Image (cartoon, rainbow, N blue to C red; front, side, top):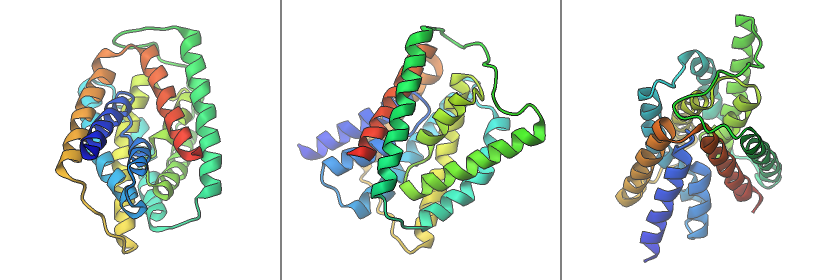
Length: 255
């Protein structure tokens, strides 16, 4: 019974997170902790499930035409080596997770308030926001590389794909439309999860393979959630779901 409850929880987490371009690592970590799995198993297992769901999400959002490689490539170029370094390092986490929980909680409240305040239930798209990134191409490139490097390091250190850090940053900078940000986050999480796994292997840590039932649950949840996010959900609903995802990540860090 406990095993099937864990499978159902993983599928639910995957569906909710995938709908906003995330892969669910923070949710998987929280669920597996509640079910009593060993800490040494939780982090690499969460990254493996991340790879499954992020792959599905990347394909779905790209199929819907929301992927922008000009936004993604500078972020990924800096984040991949930084995530590998973060995955290799092992640092004390208590104080870091407390600060992280507060920051993510603030981001969740801000995004949720903006969604409720705007009330824009637009289906199929939204107007392009006025970006706060530098207009000069070189300055924009430098800003995106800096963001990618910082978020990649954090993702490797914490054992998550980095979407919970990247999404609020891109939203605050008005870097793109909400669905393009979701598409960018999905691809970003995929490459950083792979880099984090590679860093762990380089440090001599093993990567336990999750059971087939967990992989299948994450894949099914990823298909459902990413389809809804890419094709069905209105923009306001996506923003509210993003706020919920960040709030769950904040609670996980604080508790």
